[in-house]
Image (cartoon, rainbow, N blue to C red):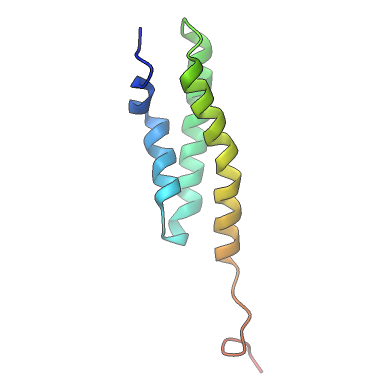
Length: 89
């Protein structure tokens, strides 16, 4: 049986952390998508494993709640800033 924090070694955790920590806007969508795909795969695998895995399931729920915020942040930074210095006249 896995310990309470052993799920921290799962791939989805490192991918999610990489998405959260990404500062380069161009890489954010790719990191977010990779984390999302791995989280979904892990959720599917958890359904086949014995035990309830409540700590990991809660962490997954928290991560899934956070991903849309990261997506919105990436989208906001993707849009050009309208400023007098960059506007074509």
